[in-house]
Length: 247
Image (cartoon, rainbow, N blue to C red; front, side, top):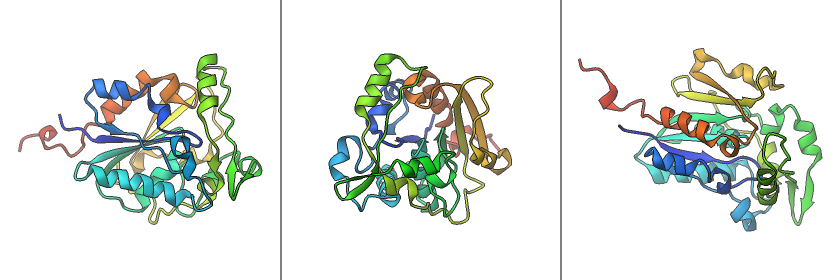
């Protein structure tokens, strides 16, 4: 079976470390993946500087996609990573065959992540100066649905997020392509009504599918088994000739 290669794009303050429970499950299912750490974060925190913005991270991911060529990829963006994925799609990166947004903002052309986030003003207000760079401190929890050990792991691993990354506008001219398969994963408690106005943009008639999971925001940490099962299913190449009916 021909599969898309999965590119995992982490969220604010995180790094490739946040996927470490998920990736062995993808390996076991035969799904090839890459999980870059975005510039200025986690093990690349030494690269933090005033020039690091949303476009920096879009370029990070575009470089990964280019390395995968000519293989088609499924871009997976968690939280802020969903905005980065939007920028990659807007740049018309070749070989992107599917996108999966994990509990992150659905932005349109000219919007920033903070613009559409229900707590966008509070996010901007948390900004602090760190050397010559404006950053947002990332608290890292705690979440009452994660174990104390997991909360401690996240809190001890997150690094400050460059402010520009969440306030720079995304470039998505023409909007989300209608013919691009797009999946949205909504994390929350059963029966919960999330305050996320941008979810009105997730319409089945425009190529979106929605998946709801009882999970904290960091679904790759809390529910890696569920997420792996979903990504294994979605990574089946939609243009695989072997799956087309014979004429």
